[in-house]
View 1 (cartoon, rainbow, N blue to C red):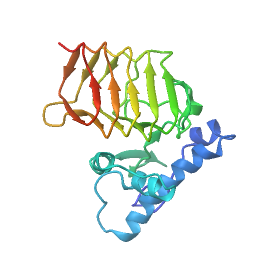
View 2 (view 1 turned 90 degrees about the vertical axis):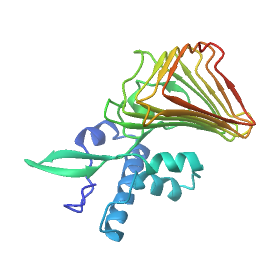
View 3 (view 1 turned 60 degrees about the vertical axis):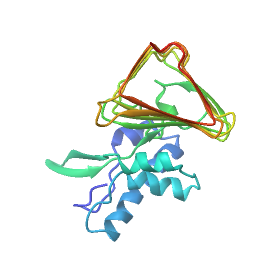
View 4 (view 1 turned 180 degrees about the vertical axis):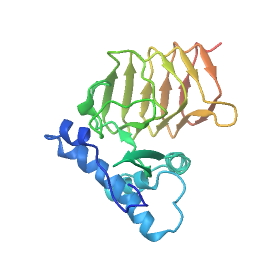
Length: 230
């Protein structure tokens, strides 16, 4: 969405790749409509990714305090070249559509394409078992939020490295984030560290993790297994 032109823009690539996947296009439109409403109500853009917050509220998906704080701290601004002019836009967050599958399958993503290095990405398992494989190795993305809630299980098989701005949450009894092959987790920097948070019976398992830098750890009545960290 570009406030300067009061217009929501969809890439032709998104439309072409999702001609048979209406949910992917609808997900992007809903988030961008949230940006549009914010522009109508506020003279100054609200902090964070208000579009994704709006989209979650519309579909009845509750946000925990940590998730909300994460979205409020996101920078979803970018620039795009439209008809020869540079326009400031707010871009949609890319989310995993649910179920198990391969990270590099574009049909698994809300934007209809595999996340790239400039994207903000959310992967959640809410009351379901989700297993993600990495057929082409570790991805390179800007921001990553991994979460298991309401008894959900999120397993990332083949992922060996996490970096940039990555946050992990396991919230609720039997909610598990499993990182069976993860060896290195390095946050962005000391001023803006990543975090692993387990609460209310949640669990995070990363027994092969040996290197942990610039990552804050929080655990409340939960299990955080980082036994391999030196």
